[in-house]
Amino acid sequence: MEKTMGTIISPSILSADFANLERDIKRVEESGADWLHIDVMDGHFVPNITIGAPVVKSIKRVSSVPLDVHLMIENPEKYLQAFKDAGADIITFHYEAVSDVPLVINLIKAFGMMAGLSIKPKTPAKEIFKFLPLLDLVLIMTVEPGFGGQEFMHECALKISEIKQNATENLIIQVDGGINNITSKICVSLGANSLVAGNYIYGHSDIAQAIRSLK
Image 1 (cartoon, rainbow, N blue to C red):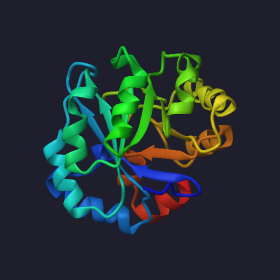
Image 2: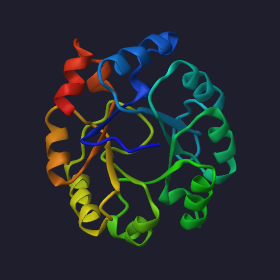
Image 3: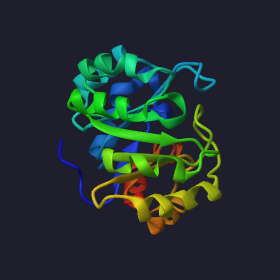
Image 4: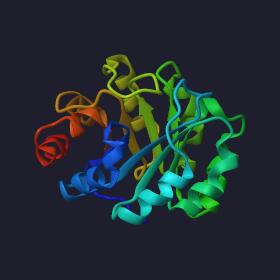
């Protein structure tokens, strides 16, 4: 899959209407979304449960953009085959959830998907510097993972520039949590080139305008 130039906007379907999910997917795609961000939570790694591979498979049938799947789960390596088969294009897992980071990265790539690594707000950026050459994407959480609609944690945004300074040229630096037309500017100025937004996009009266303001 080719990487999109410019700021990659990946709307989070966590804020969509799940009773009208196909409609809400089409709305963001037609409004300029580059990817579709899908949060998978297991109720163990984070205190919430969302969706799994069967729903991703259904989304794949109605979506025309890459599926950016964020695994907030324990033992992510056990589920890579299922998400590959479901149609995931990008798999991001948590540094805090595994004991062998390179193993999981290599498994994701072996399945032909882009590999991303995410860190929680309390995890220092330096913890993952050594893995950056192996990765396609780093996801910096600017809220505690688990629920949408939280307030942007400004201190976490400083990790963006730390990652940027130690990253390879093609690394995608993605930020998720409290992203809107103001916090997006902070993130991009620090070096982010991909933004995940849920409430700001789906709660906006003009979704296309919301996406344009992030770009």
